[in-house]
Length: 124
Image 1 (spheres, rainbow, N blue to C red):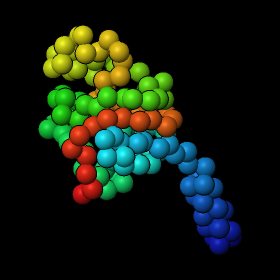
Image 2 (spheres, rainbow, N blue to C red):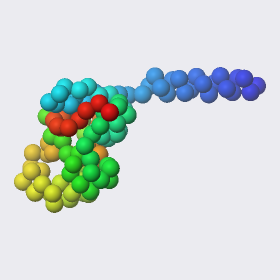
Image 3 (tube, rainbow, N blue to C red):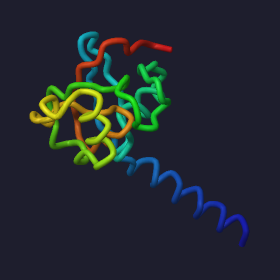
Image 4 (cartoon, rainbow, N blue to C red):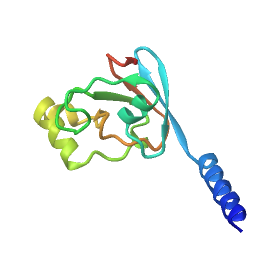
């Protein structure tokens, strides 16, 4: 019986891995392609793929070092939350937020393919 339970569990884990939805993040100007799990932040996806993404606060959303410009796929990101909006407004000014393309990579969660511009991203 224990063997049957183990086999059933292993089959479920395999199915879950196969069902994992991923999206592509293209990082300009260098053209890096990074795979992101659905709901993963841009910065976490980059780190998981072995890339350094500039940050000062370590992904806490309180600086703007990780800020990127979304060139394509703005609708494929979660809407910016209040804390992200506040941080960007304080550091970059309200005018910088009008286009909706400026995002903190540590806060922006991916739900589809996107293209962003961020200098300083490199292989770790």
